[in-house]
Length: 312
Ligand code: MLT
Image: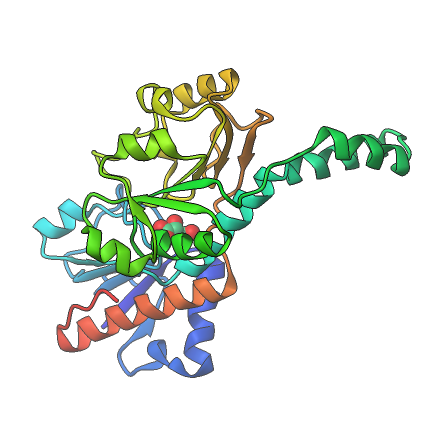
């Protein structure tokens, strides 16, 4: 049995580190980490795009060390009997922490304030003068008492909901697949919006945690922006394509959207002052990378050795 790790050096290192620090997944007899393997039984990957790749006729499984599987041709795999795994929940804490960090940092104009202070100081402005002017220019707003709308109450959405409640925010959730009861169990005191329009209309902040599908693609567009509260902050740590970036540009220009915090920088809006472009850091913590790698490694190993399909 061979498995190919199609990934950046960083992830290969993480996977190797797991093997060396006791999990030994890749030190099992016949379970080989082999980046050059010609016709592997399985692939483990993170960001590598498999859509253009010829899948060898030996391949039985592909595991994505992450939540989204849009870089894997899932339909083609299903037709060919190839099992596709992802690692649900394994990076949820990392994403949640960055979502809430960004929510508060954007509310307090933190990034603008830092950039402004550095730039003007470099241009020769004296620090006491900067402090005096900055505290007037960058007055923010508090998250407490504001409404956070969470689209998607899976592993990440539920964690965000719980912590947002601890910040004394009002939380509304919408999820087409999770029942009211499940959502309430996952996320205490979260009000469920009956329709996504209801969530759009009532939220001061909207964070989205759904996969990219034909149904969710472009769900943030001029129609949906027109329902939202003026100045809403939108946080996108799911996939860039959920947002129609041309419409987003217009919404940012008109102030309909107050801030757009995105983990998927897009050149259309990248340089706008009210955009916070983040280079896909949601899942990029040491802990999360290890959790994802560990889960993916276990899934593939169990499946190849026993035929068990366990997507957790
Ligand atoms: C995910 O789908 O969970 C993220 O894209 C993970 C990653 O950063 O690779």
